[in-house]
Amino acid sequence: MTQKHPDRVDESLIALRRILRATELYARDLAQAAGVTPAQLRVLQIVGEKKDPTAKTLATQMGVSQATVTSLVDKLVARGLVSRLTSAQDRRQTNITLTNQGEDVLEEAPDALQQRYVRAFADLADWEQAQLVSSLERVAAMLNVDNLDAAPVLATGELRTTKKND
Amino acid sequence: MTQKHPDRVDESLIALRRILRATELYARDLAQAAGVTPAQLRVLQIVGEKKDPTAKTLATQMGVSQATVTSLVDKLVARGLVSRLTSAQDRRQTNITLTNQGEDVLEEAPDALQQRYVRAFADLADWEQAQLVSSLERVAAMLNVDNLDAAPVLATGELRTTKKND
DNA sequence: GTATTTTGCTTTGAATGTTGAAGTATCACC
DNA sequence: GGTGATACTTCAACATTCAAAGCAAAATAC
Image: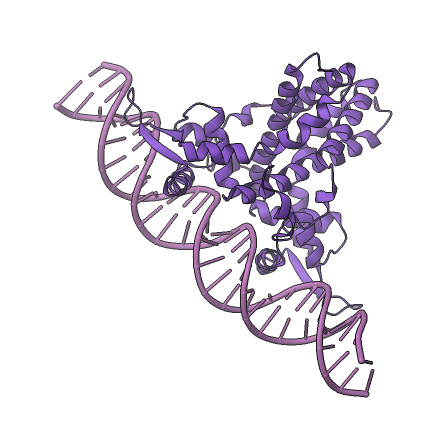
Protein backbone atom coordinates (compact mmCIF):
# COMPACT_ATOMS: atom_id res chain seq x y z
CA MET A 1 0.00 0.00 0.00
CA THR A 2 2.36 2.66 1.21
CA GLN A 3 5.23 0.83 -0.42
CA LYS A 4 6.53 1.78 -3.80
CA HIS A 5 9.65 -0.35 -4.04
CA PRO A 6 9.07 -3.82 -2.65
CA ASP A 7 12.38 -4.93 -4.15
CA ARG A 8 14.21 -2.91 -1.61
CA VAL A 9 13.32 -5.23 1.21
CA ASP A 10 14.93 -8.06 -0.68
CA GLU A 11 17.91 -5.99 -1.62
CA SER A 12 18.58 -4.93 1.90
CA LEU A 13 18.09 -8.45 3.22
CA ILE A 14 20.56 -9.77 0.70
CA ALA A 15 23.06 -7.12 1.68
CA LEU A 16 22.55 -7.91 5.35
CA ARG A 17 23.10 -11.60 4.76
CA ARG A 18 26.27 -10.87 2.89
CA ILE A 19 27.44 -8.80 5.83
CA LEU A 20 26.61 -11.56 8.28
CA ARG A 21 28.23 -14.24 6.21
CA ALA A 22 31.40 -12.32 5.47
CA THR A 23 31.79 -11.50 9.12
CA GLU A 24 31.24 -15.02 10.30
CA LEU A 25 33.57 -16.63 7.81
CA TYR A 26 36.23 -14.07 8.45
CA ALA A 27 35.95 -14.51 12.19
CA ARG A 28 36.76 -18.19 11.75
CA ASP A 29 39.85 -17.43 9.76
CA LEU A 30 41.02 -15.01 12.39
CA ALA A 31 40.44 -17.48 15.17
CA GLN A 32 42.33 -20.17 13.39
CA ALA A 33 45.18 -17.84 12.63
CA ALA A 34 45.32 -16.99 16.32
CA GLY A 35 45.38 -20.65 17.28
CA VAL A 36 42.06 -20.70 19.13
CA THR A 37 38.56 -21.74 18.22
CA PRO A 38 35.96 -19.15 17.23
CA ALA A 39 34.09 -19.54 20.49
CA GLN A 40 37.25 -19.11 22.48
CA LEU A 41 38.18 -16.03 20.51
CA ARG A 42 34.79 -14.56 21.27
CA VAL A 43 35.45 -15.06 24.95
CA LEU A 44 38.80 -13.34 24.65
CA GLN A 45 37.25 -10.44 22.78
CA ILE A 46 34.59 -9.88 25.37
CA VAL A 47 37.07 -10.18 28.19
CA GLY A 48 39.17 -7.57 26.44
CA GLU A 49 36.27 -5.28 25.81
CA LYS A 50 34.46 -5.37 29.13
CA LYS A 51 37.05 -5.12 31.81
CA ASP A 52 37.38 -8.41 33.70
CA PRO A 53 33.80 -9.59 33.28
CA THR A 54 32.23 -12.22 35.46
CA ALA A 55 31.26 -15.58 34.07
CA LYS A 56 27.67 -14.47 34.22
CA THR A 57 28.39 -11.40 32.14
CA LEU A 58 30.16 -13.53 29.59
CA ALA A 59 27.26 -15.94 29.40
CA THR A 60 24.76 -13.15 28.92
CA GLN A 61 26.82 -11.35 26.35
CA MET A 62 27.52 -14.48 24.33
CA GLY A 63 24.04 -15.84 24.67
CA VAL A 64 25.13 -19.18 26.06
CA SER A 65 24.65 -20.91 29.38
CA GLN A 66 26.96 -20.55 32.32
CA ALA A 67 27.97 -24.15 31.94
CA THR A 68 29.27 -23.39 28.49
CA VAL A 69 31.25 -20.44 29.76
CA THR A 70 32.82 -22.61 32.42
CA SER A 71 33.89 -25.08 29.77
CA LEU A 72 35.29 -22.40 27.47
CA VAL A 73 37.13 -20.63 30.23
CA ASP A 74 38.56 -23.96 31.37
CA LYS A 75 40.17 -24.37 28.00
CA LEU A 76 41.49 -20.84 27.90
CA VAL A 77 42.92 -21.20 31.39
CA ALA A 78 44.59 -24.44 30.32
CA ARG A 79 46.14 -22.54 27.42
CA GLY A 80 47.25 -19.79 29.74
CA LEU A 81 45.28 -17.07 27.96
CA VAL A 82 43.02 -16.03 30.82
CA SER A 83 42.89 -16.56 34.55
CA ARG A 84 40.10 -16.72 37.08
CA LEU A 85 39.99 -14.29 39.93
CA THR A 86 37.48 -14.63 42.70
CA SER A 87 35.76 -11.32 43.22
CA ALA A 88 36.53 -9.56 46.47
CA GLN A 89 33.09 -8.00 46.82
CA ASP A 90 31.14 -11.15 46.09
CA ARG A 91 33.05 -14.33 46.47
CA ARG A 92 30.52 -16.25 44.45
CA GLN A 93 31.59 -14.34 41.39
CA THR A 94 34.61 -15.09 39.29
CA ASN A 95 36.24 -12.38 37.22
CA ILE A 96 37.91 -13.51 34.05
CA THR A 97 41.08 -11.63 33.23
CA LEU A 98 43.41 -11.69 30.28
CA THR A 99 46.93 -12.89 30.83
CA ASN A 100 49.73 -11.21 28.95
CA GLN A 101 49.68 -14.09 26.58
CA GLY A 102 45.94 -13.66 26.13
CA GLU A 103 46.43 -10.04 25.25
CA ASP A 104 48.96 -11.03 22.64
CA VAL A 105 46.55 -13.43 21.03
CA LEU A 106 43.87 -10.79 21.03
CA GLU A 107 46.13 -8.32 19.35
CA GLU A 108 47.00 -10.77 16.65
CA ALA A 109 43.35 -11.49 15.97
CA PRO A 110 41.72 -8.11 15.77
CA ASP A 111 38.02 -7.87 15.63
CA ALA A 112 36.58 -9.51 12.56
CA LEU A 113 34.83 -6.36 11.53
CA GLN A 114 37.44 -3.87 12.42
CA GLN A 115 40.12 -5.34 10.23
CA ARG A 116 38.21 -4.95 7.01
CA TYR A 117 35.88 -2.19 7.83
CA VAL A 118 37.90 0.58 9.31
CA ARG A 119 40.12 1.19 6.36
CA ALA A 120 37.32 1.34 3.85
CA PHE A 121 35.25 3.51 6.12
CA ALA A 122 37.96 6.07 6.51
CA ASP A 123 38.06 6.55 2.76
CA LEU A 124 34.46 7.65 2.55
CA ALA A 125 33.40 11.25 2.25
CA ASP A 126 32.12 12.92 5.35
CA TRP A 127 28.47 12.84 4.38
CA GLU A 128 28.75 9.22 3.40
CA GLN A 129 30.12 8.30 6.79
CA ALA A 130 27.32 10.12 8.49
CA GLN A 131 24.72 8.39 6.36
CA LEU A 132 26.24 5.00 7.01
CA VAL A 133 26.22 5.45 10.75
CA SER A 134 22.66 6.62 10.67
CA SER A 135 21.55 3.71 8.53
CA LEU A 136 23.34 1.08 10.57
CA GLU A 137 21.97 2.41 13.79
CA ARG A 138 18.54 2.38 12.32
CA VAL A 139 18.88 -1.23 11.27
CA ALA A 140 20.23 -2.22 14.65
CA ALA A 141 17.26 -0.56 16.27
CA MET A 142 14.92 -2.37 13.93
CA LEU A 143 16.39 -5.71 14.89
CA ASN A 144 16.42 -5.04 18.60
CA VAL A 145 12.74 -4.48 18.73
CA ASP A 146 12.33 -5.88 22.20
CA ASN A 147 14.95 -6.61 24.79
CA LEU A 148 15.75 -10.06 23.50
CA ASP A 149 19.12 -8.48 23.07
CA ALA A 150 19.90 -8.48 26.74
CA ALA A 151 18.25 -11.76 27.63
CA PRO A 152 20.33 -14.88 28.05
CA VAL A 153 18.97 -15.96 24.72
CA LEU A 154 17.29 -19.09 25.83
CA ALA A 155 15.59 -18.46 29.09
CA THR A 156 15.30 -22.15 28.57
CA GLY A 157 11.81 -23.11 27.83
CA GLU A 158 9.87 -20.02 28.61
CA LEU A 159 9.85 -18.88 25.02
CA ARG A 160 8.70 -22.21 23.74
CA THR A 161 5.64 -22.88 25.82
CA THR A 162 3.29 -21.96 23.03
CA LYS A 163 5.57 -22.43 20.11
CA LYS A 164 5.51 -26.02 18.97
CA ASN A 165 2.88 -26.17 16.31
CA ASP A 166 -0.48 -27.76 17.04
CA MET B 1 44.02 13.02 8.28
CA THR B 2 41.17 13.32 5.88
CA GLN B 3 38.87 12.27 8.67
CA LYS B 4 36.84 14.72 10.64
CA HIS B 5 34.72 12.42 12.76
CA PRO B 6 36.74 9.50 14.04
CA ASP B 7 33.90 8.58 16.38
CA ARG B 8 31.89 7.44 13.45
CA VAL B 9 34.01 4.38 12.89
CA ASP B 10 33.28 3.30 16.42
CA GLU B 11 29.64 4.14 16.13
CA SER B 12 29.18 2.15 13.00
CA LEU B 13 31.14 -0.79 14.39
CA ILE B 14 28.97 -0.81 17.46
CA ALA B 15 25.85 -0.73 15.35
CA LEU B 16 27.17 -3.53 13.18
CA ARG B 17 27.94 -5.67 16.20
CA ARG B 18 24.47 -5.09 17.53
CA ILE B 19 23.08 -6.23 14.20
CA LEU B 20 25.23 -9.34 14.20
CA ARG B 21 24.43 -10.20 17.76
CA ALA B 22 20.70 -9.66 17.47
CA THR B 23 20.59 -11.79 14.37
CA GLU B 24 22.59 -14.60 15.84
CA LEU B 25 20.66 -14.77 19.07
CA TYR B 26 17.38 -14.59 17.28
CA ALA B 27 18.38 -17.32 14.88
CA ARG B 28 18.94 -19.62 17.83
CA ASP B 29 15.51 -18.95 19.21
CA LEU B 30 13.96 -19.65 15.85
CA ALA B 31 15.85 -22.88 15.47
CA GLN B 32 14.83 -24.07 18.88
CA ALA B 33 11.24 -23.14 18.26
CA ALA B 34 11.38 -25.18 15.06
CA GLY B 35 12.80 -28.14 16.93
CA VAL B 36 16.13 -28.22 15.15
CA THR B 37 19.59 -26.93 15.97
CA PRO B 38 20.89 -23.68 14.48
CA ALA B 39 23.25 -25.51 12.17
CA GLN B 40 20.49 -27.76 10.95
CA LEU B 41 18.21 -24.81 10.35
CA ARG B 42 20.90 -23.18 8.28
CA VAL B 43 21.06 -26.27 6.13
CA LEU B 44 17.32 -26.20 5.66
CA GLN B 45 17.40 -22.53 4.73
CA ILE B 46 20.06 -23.01 2.11
CA VAL B 47 18.32 -26.06 0.71
CA GLY B 48 15.17 -23.98 0.46
CA GLU B 49 16.93 -21.05 -1.13
CA LYS B 50 19.14 -22.75 -3.68
CA LYS B 51 17.09 -25.42 -5.34
CA ASP B 52 18.27 -28.90 -4.35
CA PRO B 53 21.92 -28.05 -3.79
CA THR B 54 24.65 -30.64 -3.75
CA ALA B 55 26.54 -31.42 -0.59
CA LYS B 56 29.47 -29.52 -1.99
CA THR B 57 27.37 -26.44 -2.56
CA LEU B 58 26.12 -26.62 0.99
CA ALA B 59 29.62 -26.95 2.35
CA THR B 60 30.84 -23.97 0.37
CA GLN B 61 27.90 -21.80 1.25
CA MET B 62 28.08 -22.63 4.93
CA GLY B 63 31.83 -22.45 5.11
CA VAL B 64 32.25 -25.90 6.61
CA SER B 65 33.82 -29.11 5.40
CA GLN B 66 31.99 -31.75 3.45
CA ALA B 67 32.31 -34.13 6.36
CA THR B 68 30.32 -31.71 8.46
CA VAL B 69 27.63 -31.44 5.83
CA THR B 70 27.37 -35.21 5.70
CA SER B 71 26.85 -35.29 9.43
CA LEU B 72 24.25 -32.54 9.41
CA VAL B 73 22.35 -34.01 6.51
CA ASP B 74 22.40 -37.39 8.23
CA LYS B 75 20.53 -35.90 11.15
CA LEU B 76 18.04 -34.11 8.95
CA VAL B 77 17.41 -37.27 6.97
CA ALA B 78 16.85 -39.17 10.20
CA ARG B 79 14.30 -36.53 11.17
CA GLY B 80 12.65 -36.80 7.80
CA LEU B 81 13.22 -33.16 6.88
CA VAL B 82 15.37 -33.68 3.79
CA SER B 83 16.26 -36.55 1.54
CA ARG B 84 19.27 -37.40 -0.56
CA LEU B 85 18.95 -37.83 -4.28
CA THR B 86 21.83 -39.07 -6.36
CA SER B 87 22.33 -36.76 -9.29
CA ALA B 88 21.51 -38.19 -12.68
CA GLN B 89 24.17 -36.22 -14.53
CA ASP B 90 26.97 -37.00 -12.15
CA ARG B 91 26.39 -39.92 -9.90
CA ARG B 92 29.08 -38.82 -7.51
CA GLN B 93 26.94 -35.88 -6.53
CA THR B 94 24.09 -35.94 -4.09
CA ASN B 95 21.30 -33.41 -4.26
CA ILE B 96 19.67 -32.52 -1.01
CA THR B 97 15.94 -31.92 -1.24
CA LEU B 98 13.38 -30.73 1.24
CA THR B 99 10.64 -33.14 2.21
CA ASN B 100 7.16 -31.79 2.79
CA GLN B 101 7.87 -31.95 6.46
CA GLY B 102 11.09 -30.02 5.93
CA GLU B 103 9.19 -27.32 4.10
CA ASP B 104 6.80 -27.06 6.99
CA VAL B 105 9.63 -26.56 9.44
CA LEU B 106 11.16 -23.94 7.21
CA GLU B 107 7.92 -22.05 7.01
CA GLU B 108 7.57 -22.03 10.74
CA ALA B 109 11.07 -20.72 11.21
CA PRO B 110 11.31 -17.86 8.78
CA ASP B 111 14.60 -16.26 8.17
CA ALA B 112 16.06 -14.68 11.27
CA LEU B 113 16.29 -11.33 9.62
CA GLN B 114 13.12 -11.36 7.70
CA GLN B 115 10.87 -11.77 10.70
CA ARG B 116 11.98 -8.62 12.42
CA TYR B 117 13.22 -6.58 9.62
CA VAL B 118 10.59 -6.60 6.95
CA ARG B 119 7.87 -5.03 8.99
CA ALA B 120 9.98 -2.16 10.24
CA PHE B 121 11.42 -1.59 6.82
CA ALA B 122 8.04 -1.26 5.21
CA ASP B 123 7.20 1.58 7.56
CA LEU B 124 10.06 3.74 6.42
CA ALA B 125 9.66 6.59 4.02
CA ASP B 126 10.69 6.01 0.47
CA TRP B 127 13.89 7.96 0.64
CA GLU B 128 14.84 6.26 3.88
CA GLN B 129 14.45 2.86 2.30
CA ALA B 130 16.62 3.88 -0.59
CA GLN B 131 19.29 5.22 1.71
CA LEU B 132 19.27 2.07 3.79
CA VAL B 133 19.70 -0.20 0.81
CA SER B 134 22.50 1.92 -0.48
CA SER B 135 24.27 1.95 2.86
CA LEU B 136 23.93 -1.76 3.48
CA GLU B 137 25.20 -2.62 0.06
CA ARG B 138 28.11 -0.36 0.61
CA VAL B 139 28.98 -2.03 3.87
CA ALA B 140 28.63 -5.47 2.34
CA ALA B 141 30.98 -4.44 -0.40
CA MET B 142 33.43 -3.11 2.15
CA LEU B 143 33.46 -6.41 3.98
CA ASN B 144 33.74 -8.54 0.87
CA VAL B 145 36.89 -6.85 -0.23
CA ASP B 146 38.28 -9.93 -1.86
CA ASN B 147 36.45 -13.08 -2.83
CA LEU B 148 36.89 -14.77 0.49
CA ASP B 149 33.14 -14.76 0.34
CA ALA B 150 32.96 -17.50 -2.22
CA ALA B 151 35.89 -19.55 -0.96
CA PRO B 152 35.28 -22.62 1.16
CA VAL B 153 36.40 -20.57 4.10
CA LEU B 154 39.21 -22.75 5.21
CA ALA B 155 40.76 -24.28 2.19
CA THR B 156 42.69 -25.58 5.10
CA GLY B 157 46.00 -23.94 5.07
CA GLU B 158 46.15 -22.28 1.73
CA LEU B 159 44.69 -19.05 2.95
CA ARG B 160 47.00 -18.80 5.86
CA THR B 161 50.33 -18.87 4.16
CA THR B 162 50.63 -15.11 4.24
CA LYS B 163 48.19 -14.29 6.96
CA LYS B 164 50.09 -13.94 10.18
CA ASN B 165 50.45 -10.24 10.70
CA ASP B 166 53.16 -8.16 9.10
C1' DG C 1 40.20 -48.84 -24.34
C1' DT C 2 42.36 -49.32 -20.08
C1' DA C 3 45.20 -46.76 -16.39
C1' DT C 4 45.77 -42.77 -13.63
C1' DT C 5 44.15 -38.84 -11.52
C1' DT C 6 40.67 -36.02 -9.87
C1' DT C 7 36.33 -35.19 -7.80
C1' DG C 8 32.29 -35.84 -4.58
C1' DC C 9 30.84 -37.98 -0.79
C1' DT C 10 31.01 -40.96 3.47
C1' DT C 11 33.16 -43.12 7.43
C1' DT C 12 35.95 -42.95 11.41
C1' DG C 13 38.09 -41.07 15.37
C1' DA C 14 38.88 -37.22 18.13
C1' DA C 15 38.31 -32.55 19.94
C1' DT C 16 35.23 -28.81 21.01
C1' DG C 17 30.74 -26.63 22.04
C1' DT C 18 26.48 -26.87 24.21
C1' DT C 19 22.98 -27.77 27.48
C1' DG C 20 20.00 -29.27 31.72
C1' DA C 21 20.24 -31.09 36.07
C1' DA C 22 22.41 -31.58 40.24
C1' DG C 23 25.75 -29.97 43.52
C1' DT C 24 28.50 -26.40 46.27
C1' DA C 25 29.50 -22.06 48.11
C1' DT C 26 28.21 -17.41 49.04
C1' DC C 27 25.17 -13.59 49.66
C1' DA C 28 20.79 -11.17 51.11
C1' DC C 29 17.08 -10.83 53.92
C1' DC C 30 14.59 -11.27 57.91
C1' DG D 1 21.00 -18.10 62.38
C1' DG D 2 17.76 -19.87 58.86
C1' DT D 3 15.78 -19.53 54.22
C1' DG D 4 15.92 -18.60 49.65
C1' DA D 5 18.23 -16.66 45.80
C1' DT D 6 22.53 -16.21 43.17
C1' DA D 7 27.14 -17.58 40.92
C1' DC D 8 29.65 -21.01 39.56
C1' DT D 9 31.12 -25.92 38.72
C1' DT D 10 30.54 -30.80 37.71
C1' DC D 11 28.46 -34.42 35.15
C1' DA D 12 26.35 -36.89 31.45
C1' DA D 13 24.63 -36.62 27.00
C1' DC D 14 24.40 -34.93 22.43
C1' DA D 15 25.69 -31.73 18.40
C1' DT D 16 29.22 -29.69 15.59
C1' DT D 17 33.43 -29.81 13.47
C1' DC D 18 37.49 -31.44 11.21
C1' DA D 19 41.46 -34.30 9.16
C1' DA D 20 42.49 -38.54 7.34
C1' DA D 21 41.27 -42.52 5.08
C1' DG D 22 38.19 -44.87 2.08
C1' DC D 23 35.08 -45.54 -1.89
C1' DA D 24 32.82 -44.78 -6.16
C1' DA D 25 32.26 -42.21 -10.32
C1' DA D 26 33.96 -39.04 -13.68
C1' DA D 27 37.72 -36.96 -16.32
C1' DT D 28 42.02 -37.27 -18.29
C1' DA D 29 46.01 -39.64 -20.01
C1' DC D 30 48.26 -42.74 -22.66
